[in-house]
Amino acid sequence: MHTFYPSAGVEYEIKPRTGTAFNLRSGQTLTVIDPLGCQVSDMLAFSAADPRESISSGRTFDYASRIFLTVPDPLYSNRSNIFLRITADTCGRHDFLFTPCSKDTFRIIYGDAEPHRGCFGNFVEALAPWGVEEDAIPIPFNCFMNVIVDGKSGELRVDIPKSKAGDYVSFVAEVDLVIALTACSALRSNGGSFKPIRWKVTDPEDHSPST
Image 1 (cartoon, one colour):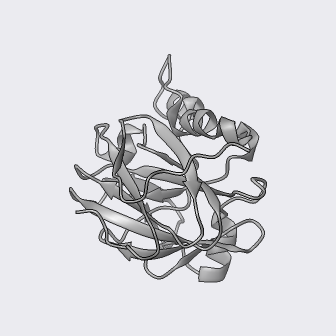
Image 2 (cartoon, helix red, strand yellow):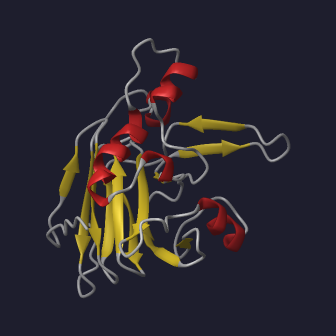
Image 3 (cartoon, helix red, strand yellow):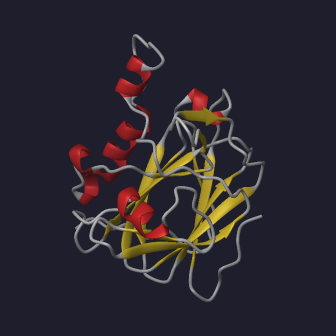
């Protein structure tokens, strides 16, 4: 099986409207950083041992009994195993409801005649070396995405992210994982512009966040 272990402590950048994937060892911490502010990063996680086991919003919501997650919430898999725990969060608002934006998103919602492949297409490309096919891509944890939920009607509204320049959210891995990250491609989710995302992995003895 394909592997790519990023260098611990090195800060990587995802260019606007692109994505990446890599291995994360149990005990390591992943920090996702919004360097400029108001930029969403979709995140997926799969078991390195069996990529049919993937991050699950439904299982996580079942056990958390709420939809807005932050420190110290765990993120569960479709097999009810804890994949990640949120260990630091300077933004405090993220989404786990919306699917990754795609060509169909831009065609149906935005009316684009020649739609961008979106986060979904970026996930497909990034995860192909690990054998993850497009029908196996679940709902991502959308770092920094600000979704407003009407408690009476259930209506959903995507608002401007609350993240400011330098905000971050960190996750410690409970098992060996394959992680995929994007710099989201939907204008509405990102305050009207496309910006980069940065990320880094730290080993258990060094959990200091990026500044």
